[in-house]
Each structure stands twice: as structure tokens, then as C-alpha cells.
Length: 430
Image (cartoon, rainbow, N blue to C red; front, top):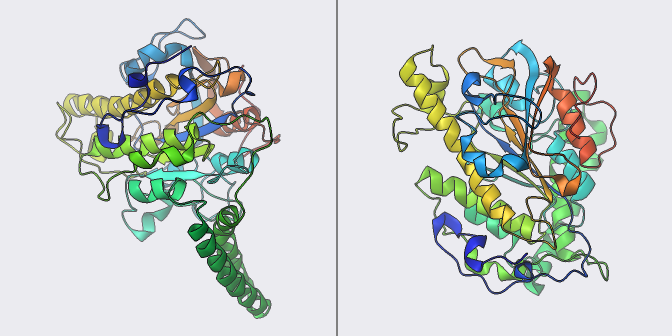
């Protein structure tokens, strides 16, 4: 199927960008299937459950007021209800850090997050194995755990990049130029020297200090891998699938230096970068924190909203605050809908980029009013390359572990695990 060039992608910040003719507008059939990508989008502060929950189950369901922006993509989503994250009642901090990990990271070691594990499984040949983005800095150091959903095996948080220009440059700018290789090689040699000295000194450290040094080594492993890919860029296997958008054709989409003042433009800029990264196969795993877990982002720019997000989540059943809460929640879903529109318009040889992606969207908290972790809002968008049956509302037994769902997602993405977090089984995702 051919697509109009005008349908494909609006530029960073909403400006229309005219693309050169690309193979995706009339792709030949001699390429192999495109790879499966994975994305996670975290929405802070939960929702009002009656405004989120679809009516009906299986394929016979109707979208709720919050999910109504996805009406054109009803056949591309899978809504999963009755999942319990952690305990019946917890805190923003606990529920946020457990969103992709199954168990929280407050005062204990938990699992690595599923986005990190999936990136290790499918991201190896991409320039940036795991792209992590966010829109808000931590409120304070004590809330750092609440400002992050991605973690590695050593209990080290994997912080998101907040600046669109920096994120774009990390993906595309001069990545494989001779000058970039020279700089990376120099950095790599300096890094090796620092690591050698650090490892020799760690032999005489106490147990606690050795643990801190382990975290330090773990935190720079990703930098090592990135530098290695610059010095020795990944090579494509002859005859293998190649993306229809080449990374070196993205320069005209580089975001402005300043972070957008407009919250919607800011969010959409980051989403556009995620799309470009996956479309060009520069990354196969993306995570977006649409706000940190205690977000007090002011949504007065939306008609009918006078308060910040956190205030509306603690609505105390006040009708006005409930209306504002619904509007804010629907705005987040609209951003997902916009992303799905664009991904569905990118053909990859018989399947769209959306078809070839599994996107997890939701919150670690059911609702802010009671800090509930019961029946958290969760949906999947995309078909994971045909591995997922979509257009369904799945109701699992009440208070089923969220870890069961996360384990099922891992398995769909090819990660071989039979247990994850607090799992007691799996969820049949089809």
C-alpha cells in the first residue's frame, strides 16, 4: 500500500516537514520482514478508574471516555484490566518504580525493568540499544526513585534524557563520521584507564564500598557499549532488512536548541524522536516518562482545567476535580493516539511501523486519590510483528499480579523467563 507523503510525519514541534521520496511510499517486496520494536510510555498519577475502564470484554468492548481518542485504532490495541501493581495501597514512589519492574526499588533490590531486558534482547545491533526520554526533572533528590521507571540488573536507575535536541543528537548527529570515531576512540581509551585504576583500588574496599563501585561500573557499561558502536559501527548482513528512512536523512528534523515552552509541543517533539529512531532502526527500544511519578505539571492550558495533575488526582470525589482529572488523562491518551496515527502511516513492506511495534502505555497507579495499585490502567498498542492479537479487552482475575503481565510481555519480545518480579503465572495475550 502506498502512502501520501503528507500523511507520514509532522515535524518536531508541529511544523510540517516535506520528506524526500522514500521506499516506504512504494516499498519493494524483496526485503525481509522489519524487526519488532518495543516502547513504553509512563503516565503519572493514575486515572479515575470508571473513566478509563472499557465496557464489555474480548473483542466486544466499547472505549471509555479517557480511551475515546483511540477510536480509529480500536483494532490495534489490547486493554488489560484488574492488574495489581505491588499491594492494594502504596505510594507514588513505590508504584512508579515498580511499573516496569514488578517490584519497587525503595530500600531493596528489585528486578531490572522489562525495557532494559528487552533492549538487551533486541537492541544489540542498533546504534542506541535503549532510548529513554522524559519531560520533568526530579522534584528533589529524595524523590529520585519516583522520577524513573528504567533500571538495570544492579539496581542502578537508568535516567531519561529530558532535552529533545540532546536526544536527537544522541541518535543521529555525526554518529559515524570520521571525527566522531576519533573522539569516541579517545574517550574509550580514557574510560579504559579510569576503569583499570578503579578496579585495582576496589580490592581493598569494604563490602558497602564494593557495592557502590559495582553500581559505578554498571552505570558506565552503557557508555562503553555506545562508544564501541561509534568506533566500530554495526554492519548490516547482506540481504537483510534495511529501514526505509536512513539515519543520515534526518538532519532537517533536528529540534530547536531550546526546550519548547508549550507542554504539548514538548511531549510531541519527544514522541517524534521516538518515531524517527524506530523508523530509521537507530533504536528498537524506547521509553518515555510523560511525567515523573509525583508530577505537578500545570494543565491550565487545557480547556476546563484549572489545577495541576497531582491536585486533580487527589480529587476527593469533587465533581470539578474529577472532570479535570479526566481531561488530563485523556490528553495523555491523545498523545499516544497521535503517535499511533504516524506509525500506522509508515509502511515497512506490507506491515506498518505500528504493526511491527509493541507499545506499553499506562500508569503504575490506579488512582491518586487513594494511592491504589489495584486495577492499574494498562494497554498495549501494536501487534508486535504479528505476535499479538489486538482489538481486545482482557479482564484477568481480580488482583492478578502486574508482574504476570510484564512476564508475558517479556516472553512476547523473545526474552526467555519463566518468572519475573512477583509473578504467579502469565497473562494470555494471544
